[in-house]
Image (tube, rainbow, N blue to C red; front, side):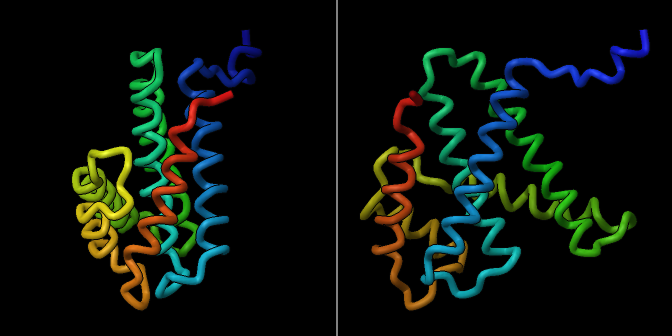
Length: 163
């Protein structure tokens, strides 16, 4: 009877979401390290990049054939993201008494970004996406058109059908 507590029970949505979230984090880290158009490479920049990639992934999931499954996957992705925010902020030294306030502010920021994210799947040269990038205040030299093109290519990679 105790064995049931040693086995981690996961359903299909949790497994898919965990794998997607790992990919999002890896892509975000690579993207941050390989590009030099960011003003700074800090926690805020990392948060914004992961947020953009998470939104891209959520959009891709909504294009999947089994929409009901992937709506649940998206919910699990958001839960993983929030848990990851909590853990990473704790690692930065934020204590138990104030962690909730910090997590809440980042979650509000994420949902605001989600709301402002362009609805189109092709957003290169899209003024809405350029305005979105300006909102993040990450790009140096105001090279928003170039950065928009790079994000568009990355988004197209995300929405390609999975093998």
